[in-house]
Image (cartoon, rainbow, N blue to C red):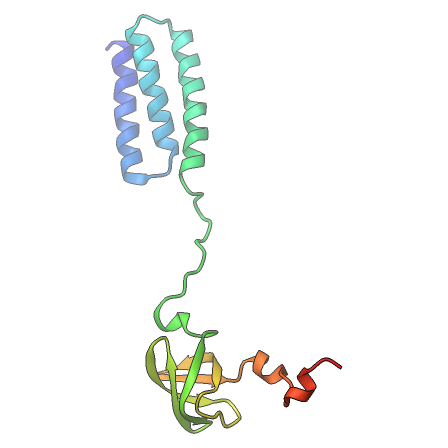
Length: 156
């Protein structure tokens, strides 16, 4: 069997393995084998074929590492659906207390309950968590820290 055919066969096997596994390593070696096969078909000696294989393999591996996301790194957590609601703001539509009430949350009306206090209609509240089909809410910190009257808010 001709040297170029051996390199070409190795390239095909490795590229098929890369298509199945998608790690980047097999594809890089497969591309290097393909380059060595072209060199062998052009009449290059074994030493030159090995140098071309090594150089092209190294370059292909470096390029693949840049293009393919690193394996084993967790993707950033993206909360969706109900998991995305805690921390969002809702508006009280029916007085909310520890026993129940309603809020407008993400464009929908939700049954709600507060952790401690009575929350009046129109109050902007923060969603603490979702408990079944009920939003557990509390007043946002910004609301709690505001002064009681306009006199206190005015600079002296």
